[in-house]
Image 1 (cartoon, rainbow, N blue to C red):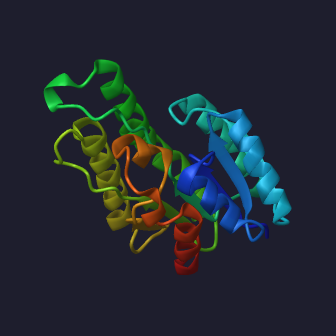
Image 2: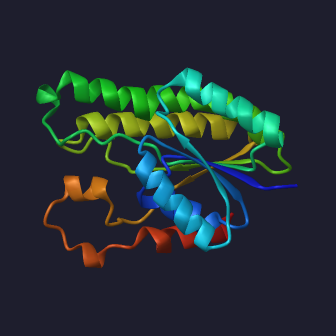
Length: 213
């Protein structure tokens, strides 16, 4: 049976690194908004002897995501792994000065989409022999200037923790990882001027995570 890994937020950073690391053991279903970045990822996956299905779509589009999940079910009947790295990082701002558009986007991507996707993906993971949902914490909640990102990221992880507690006996498995600081585009916006050479590269983090699976 083909092992399927659904990766939401696959075009760059840790999502892309995990997609490359998981191939060719898994067929990668890569979801992201940027078509060009997905195509570049596909080239790298193929160079490793792997294969991918590219899904250039927005995780906040519930109809599109439902169609994708139905397609996974119809083609393979299951998903062995869901890696959820899709996240929106609003600009740093005092809580009283958060722009409405930034707040709405953080809630839509970090919270609402996560809750909707759990409902869609759960049946795919349950249909696998040992389905696993994988989430990534970034504990910024309550830190100054991280109001929009920190609070909505905390809400995302709270959802994942509830799902994890509910499924301990019945499945699917849910795992929450807190990666070390990585030289990603998001961190670069949060900490400009930081020594990026001192950070852990996403491919090294991905390799360590895959070992735990």
